[in-house]
Length: 286
Image (cartoon, rainbow, N blue to C red; front, side, top):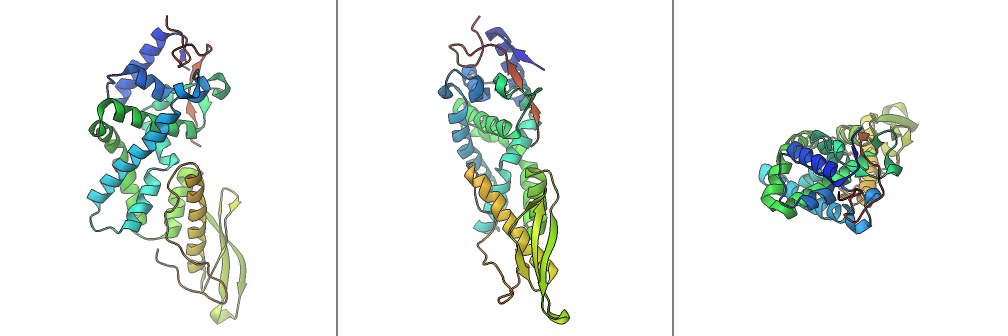
């Protein structure tokens, strides 16, 4: 596992990072800040937290521009749903891994558990890096860096969403966010054999989501999947991600059944072995 003990080693690390990113920073200290988690910074203002905040907005702009141009016939709601997947924490962590960002993240000893850190930190560092490239080279530089990483995510998300199938979409999100495939549990069924209604909930990684009624199992499963999606993406919103990927739909019940057929990766970290010094990046200037 790489370690950074002094400024000379930091310079080597930053040079390797730039090669992996295929982008050379004019301001090398800006890159160092992009990679610095709050746990290894002298103060929070020396960490990448502010850059993460900014990078989230830059990522959203680049994604919205790409979706607007790529899908001229898509309605606003569909574009929003695709964007919600593409800018999610899980997708950011995936893209970060593609540029080997886990080899360059600067974290404190408290987060170095056998060389592994949560994917949420990797995703936040990736957003900080987007802001750094934008500040260093402008929007075109950020776009050029992002689009090769975004293209496969956009195509995958659009392919799933074009079906307007909540079960397929839940499977896509659950596998990326929780690493698990959804299952559906029948909680209740009522009525005569020729006119049964079903109460079904989605279950992901042992977590039971709000149930839904349907005039058949397929319909109930679709609505249950929608409820799970709303809850999962609502949690992303609480973490600073877009909250809604599906339209508002009233919950069905046995008296009012209607059709609803329409629509932690762990990574290696760089261990910071010395107490933070005036640079704020956890290394000495020697």
